[in-house]
Amino acid sequence: MTGLSASLTDREMEVLRLLVAGHTVKTIAARLGRSETSINERLRTARRKTGVGSSRELARLLDLQKNCDKKIDLPGRDFAGTDLSHTAAMGVRGSKGMIVMLIAIPLAAAGLMLAAAPSADQAAAPNAVSSPASAELPLAGSWSLDTSEMPVSERPQRVTIAFDAAPDGKWKTRVEIVAPDGSSRYSESTAALDGVPVPITGNMDFIDSVALRQPAPDTLVMTLGKAGARVSTRVYTVAKDRESMTETIVWSVGSREKLETTRFNRLD
Image (cartoon, rainbow, N blue to C red):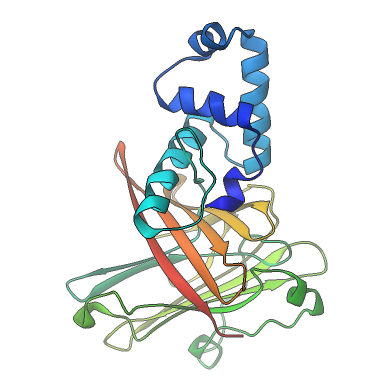
């Protein structure tokens, strides 16, 4: 994922590579002939640039993303050991006809969630982008999940995400999932890109909060939570032609993490 790693310098990447390899700040400083203060400053700067709160988490995510990029042939910077990011707000999962979808996204440079529950008619489809400023933002607009690689028996009828940028710098997000049996789930939120969790409204009971960061104009890092615990971190990256968007998901499963990717196509 180029958006996240592109903001980091070679020296910052080097420190993160050593960190994910198991080194401590002390051993990294000794290896590079730098002071521990200097190493801590590089890590602090990398966290600030990417919006990821933990240095080890950032290093691990970058490493997972590098491996993911190789598998799905995504363009990526040659990081000597990593590339991705942790945050939350959406996911799709098919399992024996059961679909699990987590979503909550932003409204004005890539934001967060919190909105009143819509009527039945409104729940039928995501709201179209209405803000004039949205046209200048790669993430703004409505997106539809590409389900072509999912087993036919597990494919949802429809999964859509709509991002709308507001004049106050926040982002409004609406997600709708229509399961194979026709049942529908949705979530809405409005939030700033400051990484602060906000409530999610709707009927997706597997998540109740979302936090957003935007390390680059074409990239959104989202963290979904439930009862104060992290459920997943998602990185959304828009292609150069702005017609498709890749979602990289890091699921939290006990003390382990699982990585998967999905793709969305632009609707408007």
